[in-house]
Figure (tube, rainbow, N blue to C red):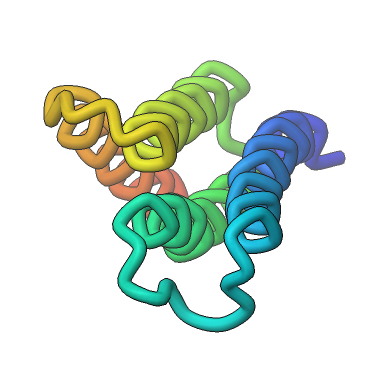
Length: 125
Protein backbone atom coordinates (compact mmCIF):
# COMPACT_ATOMS: atom_id res chain seq x y z
CA UNK A 1 0.00 0.00 0.00
CA UNK A 2 1.34 3.44 -1.00
CA UNK A 3 4.46 1.87 -2.47
CA UNK A 4 4.68 4.39 -5.32
CA UNK A 5 4.19 7.44 -3.13
CA UNK A 6 6.57 5.95 -0.59
CA UNK A 7 9.29 5.59 -3.20
CA UNK A 8 9.05 9.24 -4.23
CA UNK A 9 8.77 10.33 -0.59
CA UNK A 10 12.03 8.51 0.16
CA UNK A 11 13.87 10.03 -2.81
CA UNK A 12 12.58 13.52 -2.08
CA UNK A 13 13.49 13.18 1.59
CA UNK A 14 17.06 12.25 0.70
CA UNK A 15 17.33 15.36 -1.45
CA UNK A 16 15.83 17.48 1.34
CA UNK A 17 18.46 16.14 3.75
CA UNK A 18 21.13 17.09 1.21
CA UNK A 19 19.75 20.64 0.93
CA UNK A 20 19.53 20.90 4.72
CA UNK A 21 23.09 19.67 5.17
CA UNK A 22 24.34 22.34 2.78
CA UNK A 23 22.70 25.02 4.92
CA UNK A 24 24.03 23.54 8.17
CA UNK A 25 27.59 23.11 6.89
CA UNK A 26 27.67 26.66 5.52
CA UNK A 27 26.30 28.10 8.76
CA UNK A 28 28.87 26.26 10.86
CA UNK A 29 31.73 27.13 8.54
CA UNK A 30 30.85 30.82 8.57
CA UNK A 31 29.66 31.22 12.17
CA UNK A 32 26.10 32.20 11.23
CA UNK A 33 23.63 30.69 13.65
CA UNK A 34 20.45 32.64 12.81
CA UNK A 35 19.13 34.28 9.68
CA UNK A 36 21.32 34.81 6.64
CA UNK A 37 23.56 37.65 7.95
CA UNK A 38 23.28 39.29 4.54
CA UNK A 39 25.28 36.47 2.96
CA UNK A 40 23.91 35.83 -0.55
CA UNK A 41 25.35 32.30 -0.70
CA UNK A 42 23.63 31.33 2.55
CA UNK A 43 20.41 33.00 1.45
CA UNK A 44 20.41 30.91 -1.74
CA UNK A 45 20.91 27.72 0.22
CA UNK A 46 18.19 28.66 2.71
CA UNK A 47 15.74 29.43 -0.09
CA UNK A 48 16.54 26.19 -1.90
CA UNK A 49 15.72 24.28 1.28
CA UNK A 50 12.70 26.43 2.11
CA UNK A 51 11.18 26.30 -1.34
CA UNK A 52 11.55 22.54 -1.32
CA UNK A 53 9.84 22.34 2.07
CA UNK A 54 6.99 24.50 0.76
CA UNK A 55 6.17 22.46 -2.35
CA UNK A 56 7.28 18.84 -1.95
CA UNK A 57 4.95 17.91 0.95
CA UNK A 58 1.82 19.04 -0.89
CA UNK A 59 2.84 17.02 -3.94
CA UNK A 60 3.39 13.93 -1.81
CA UNK A 61 0.08 14.38 0.01
CA UNK A 62 -1.74 14.60 -3.32
CA UNK A 63 0.09 11.53 -4.60
CA UNK A 64 -0.75 9.57 -1.46
CA UNK A 65 -4.41 10.52 -1.68
CA UNK A 66 -4.51 9.63 -5.38
CA UNK A 67 -2.79 6.30 -4.73
CA UNK A 68 -5.20 5.56 -1.89
CA UNK A 69 -8.10 6.26 -4.23
CA UNK A 70 -6.78 3.75 -6.74
CA UNK A 71 -5.08 5.92 -9.38
CA UNK A 72 -3.08 3.91 -11.88
CA UNK A 73 0.66 3.41 -11.49
CA UNK A 74 1.36 5.23 -14.77
CA UNK A 75 -0.28 8.47 -13.59
CA UNK A 76 1.28 8.23 -10.14
CA UNK A 77 4.76 7.70 -11.59
CA UNK A 78 4.26 10.60 -14.00
CA UNK A 79 3.26 12.81 -11.08
CA UNK A 80 6.15 11.58 -8.93
CA UNK A 81 8.74 11.94 -11.67
CA UNK A 82 7.63 15.49 -12.45
CA UNK A 83 7.70 16.39 -8.77
CA UNK A 84 11.13 14.83 -8.27
CA UNK A 85 12.65 16.33 -11.42
CA UNK A 86 11.13 19.71 -10.67
CA UNK A 87 12.42 19.82 -7.12
CA UNK A 88 15.86 18.59 -8.19
CA UNK A 89 16.20 21.17 -10.97
CA UNK A 90 14.99 24.03 -8.82
CA UNK A 91 16.94 23.02 -5.73
CA UNK A 92 20.21 22.43 -7.53
CA UNK A 93 19.92 25.73 -9.36
CA UNK A 94 19.36 27.63 -6.13
CA UNK A 95 21.78 25.85 -3.86
CA UNK A 96 24.68 25.99 -6.32
CA UNK A 97 23.69 29.41 -7.71
CA UNK A 98 24.04 28.18 -11.25
CA UNK A 99 22.56 31.36 -12.70
CA UNK A 100 20.66 29.43 -15.34
CA UNK A 101 17.05 30.49 -15.12
CA UNK A 102 16.04 27.56 -17.31
CA UNK A 103 16.63 25.14 -14.42
CA UNK A 104 14.81 27.32 -11.94
CA UNK A 105 11.87 28.05 -14.22
CA UNK A 106 11.75 24.50 -15.59
CA UNK A 107 11.84 23.13 -12.06
CA UNK A 108 8.91 25.27 -11.01
CA UNK A 109 6.94 24.40 -14.16
CA UNK A 110 7.43 20.68 -13.52
CA UNK A 111 6.52 21.11 -9.85
CA UNK A 112 3.34 23.05 -10.66
CA UNK A 113 2.36 20.48 -13.31
CA UNK A 114 2.89 17.69 -10.76
CA UNK A 115 0.66 19.51 -8.25
CA UNK A 116 -2.04 20.07 -10.86
CA UNK A 117 -1.88 16.42 -11.96
CA UNK A 118 -2.02 15.27 -8.34
CA UNK A 119 -5.04 17.48 -7.71
CA UNK A 120 -6.81 16.20 -10.81
CA UNK A 121 -6.10 12.60 -9.82
CA UNK A 122 -7.78 13.27 -6.48
CA UNK A 123 -10.97 14.67 -7.99
CA UNK A 124 -13.94 12.26 -8.03
CA UNK A 125 -14.53 12.41 -11.79
